[in-house]
Image (cartoon, rainbow, N blue to C red; front, side, top):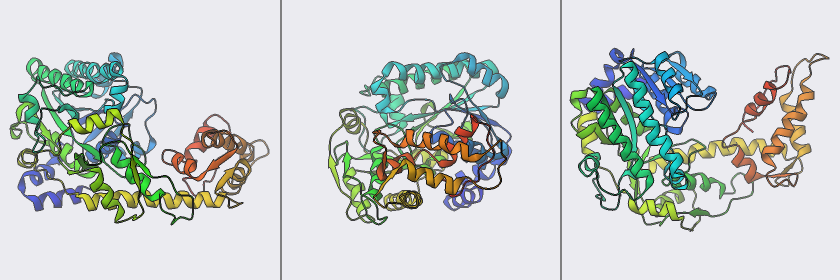
Length: 465
């Protein structure tokens, strides 16, 4: 990734290229990422270690995903059980891993719909958490705090196009129209006070909807696009399995919203972190990270170039449709290009093709596993079919009399049926099986069962179920 970023940056001009090529000098500086197990956090951990930064990835999870540790390699350290609302845990984190040269990313915050459903919880995490993070930073002399703001900070009075982060700082009393936006404003106010009282170096990035190839995501508004892209391959019959229903669009299909593909976002966030203080000309060092903008209808038209039969119907979600109509149509790009050397590279056709290809590849692997288990060929799995598959493919090699993997198969099958037989009728449908595979693997089930039992090693054949 280092070579690709460097060459691309140099083609765009000396601004970003010079900063990226000189990052080795800054590589010894440590970055603490709070909320590292989220969609943006995991990517940012990898992007920074690829750039030579040492990264401490922290999250409220007791144990962070093993894939995150692998992605960061020797430059990364995972620290679990750090809840942003827990001052003691934060102070311990900074005492052990922070100093005056540490950069901090605070990514811990619920998404828009989650905030609307439980504003008090979101307030404690977003605003209360930021206050505690800044206090912990001050205790070790850390100055640079980076924060991911959101298009949810903009209300009905904001510009529809060419919207800048500057507008937020110049209109501090505007009504964002939601608790989500008000809480983001509260974080910006805390960071401004940190700059004043502690000579801090706060920076914030206004994020549009984040698009990616992952199989799971949070409960936000712009995530409708990810839902649609996931649904499209399931409406085709190319895998010889039952098709899914029409996609249900929760917002007005003619409302335009700004988005950004995650690869572009990472380049923008890293550029914001690495920029010299003197290069950041915008008030409160705030920058929009632009990408592409589209309406649901425009997205669906692009999807149909790959899946002509893609169908949808509209059932408006009150919160999501409200937010979609409040937020800007597109974000300004001049400021990020001027001060960060950043401009997006993913346009609509490239984004849709990339995301659909990733989903389709996963679907093929999932379908192959499903068909391998579906002995009767009725597009349903029962316990005996799953057990037969587990015994045939997952238990290999020599066993001792006292320790046998066969004995553990029952526990594995019990766990799989508990997860997959959602309506408790003894049968597992293709759609349920496919949905489960978005966030689970057979390896994971085996490891969880093994952790509670003294059994020999399994040889896994096939990986993801």
